[in-house]
Length: 365
Image: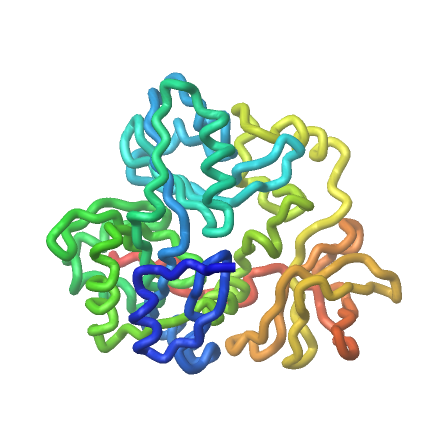
């Protein structure tokens, strides 16, 4: 299989990054140390290549919105220059993808989707839009670089001025940067204050170099990003979110607007009535060993679930992870035994996030 390279591929090679396949792309896993990159993100500011993600533009009359009926986000209720997290679901209520919607104007939205699902998402969304709606896939001509960490605002001020301070959590705007106007948002996937910068692919290398020229900024790869998102209690499509589970089982009902129609709504309403059989929970391991994807979970010597993802957290100083367990056993404080490939470890069911008091909702007075 041939893997795609982002526009920053040669920059990663120059930095001696360890490259590996991810979602059909060659991506940097780390630039020397996953643990050090994780720690640095929580103390300063790290730049991440997220150019592999997909971006769509949908334009249509909001009074006749078919996009609103396609995904779980209430897109017509959104205020311009705000973002919302939600799902694109199958008819049975399981996620085709999780995504973030940006309302760019009263009749225009940008949808940011996962790299592995770009083609499938585009096909499903287009199939549900009206003939009057205009759909455009801008993924290939768009670069996305994330700057994350408590000092990220300090860095961004140098690039775009004090106006960056006006952005609150899950808001975006256009800013003057590198000779043009570009979207900068503040959503984040690390549990820290952070920004996402979108611009044309021809500007990607220039932006990357500009960021890394700041003494506060270091590059970080997908290895650190996985630890950071797990510490922050954030799910990943393909691990916690798949077509075998529903958002209700994943504990994400707040991202479903049952007051409107959306694909999969009826199936989820039925599940709400009958109740879920399994629930997504967090687990903290008694020690530094880490649970792995598909490891079986036992409570009181009975198999009751499986691990979706796990890492060693340098901030908790223990192994942490997510797992689905039988709903009646998903009780905080319950002891579990996880069957590893070699041996087993004990853990305690713990409600994420695993670390608190981070900079993500920081606001200057």
